[in-house]
Length: 319
Image (cartoon, rainbow, N blue to C red; front, side, top):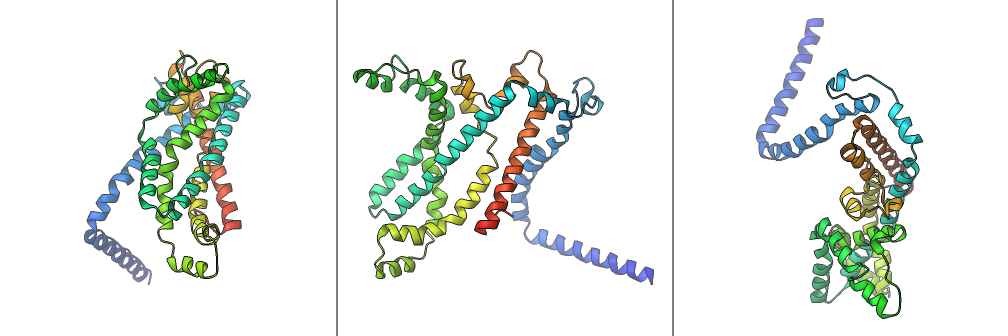
């Protein structure tokens, strides 16, 4: 009896393996197409997880990861009690939340404006103008900001001086740094971020608009009650994904805009980690890894929390 059960199990496993092999053989082109992104994720996102253990060790390069001594939560405690902790966390959260509050709704509004515009030539021209800044590199963008906002030769300060005002050191100001960072980010990406929303709006059933017109609905009401409900599920999913990066302000742009006079508002986790890892005379890789690990955990917890709220109140979520 036991041998019979064993044979049945083996036969079941073999039949499953045959079905899998047959499936792969019949669609091998698709599996090959998926193989490279899968390999990229495994090599650069999953295998490095092994190195996270140095956050709990005093890493010594000559001893390697396994040979370095365990120190528990020493590096985490060091970060939580360091003078930079409050500043770095505050700046990171402020820039991300400020950018999300301004940058998230603007592409939705712009996409709705494109959708209801009847003049196709004007619509295409504005779309091209708003898409173009996305293709400007961060280095060029920051260079443009330094040129336009220069106290001596910048066009903005020339206009201010022309009207009797005093030149402003925009790029060296703690207060102006946050606004310049966020609004330049919005200007650069708002057109590109409308692409997904425009594609969603293109699938709206025109019969709904015709019915709304027959009922006497204005163009604004049609946008509010026909177009916007279609966008909301997609917008919620994108919002959830964006909240997963709430502690991860981009490094390049912040670092390029950063200087000694605006450091109090421009020092974020990514730049702080870079300086610890590469610019310090005695780099502490365990300490840097602990900060990065803490950052990832907070992002994951926020993502789960926002996803739970969206699932509970909006019936739309990632899982």
